[in-house]
Image (cartoon, rainbow, N blue to C red; front, side, top):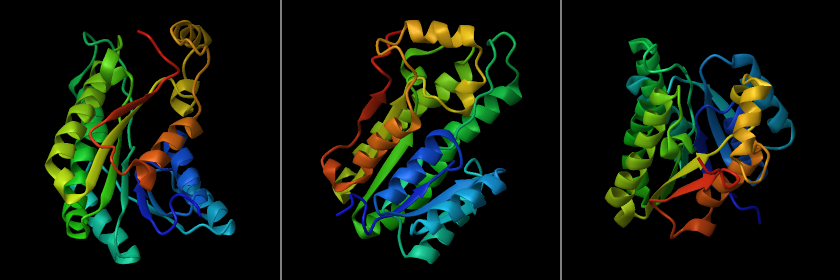
Length: 248
């Protein structure tokens, strides 16, 4: 039997990079998948059509995770469509890199709202349904940068570090209800974001990665699959790094 058979999963930011890899992996492992997008409607429709043609139960929802009201409506919509949500993956995220001396308030606020407030928004809305079911897995996508920091990414590092503290706290609060909450901290993964980096910057990063390569989205998705499945029923409050032994 597939690892996620009969599970209902909601994945935010599911049309590109790590999010898309998770959508594909979860669908392949038998989950009914709801995923969100904000502006990539064409990509969302293409992904939905492709996976439905392969027999997957999947649907895209246009929703801004940074909005508390939109998150509330999203959870209601998904539960109305499928009856429940067993797995929530908080993956939506952006970067607005700049040295702190040059960073403006909008760059700070945009990253904090999209990367960190979104996790509060969705987790807040899913807790009551999961508590009622006395079951659930919440997976928050942080970053190795949230542990190490990185020049030019004070806003991004702060948001991703906040996710780790949030995850541990929520795991303490809801553990008695048989709900798990864990974080994944990817290192430098080959995505649209990293493709924008210069070859010189990539080479500098590779010097600090003992495995001497960038990671793949599927490698992060494999860890998410473990945390979403019943293979991890006693794993909670943890942060799992997927970073090729990155040492910074």
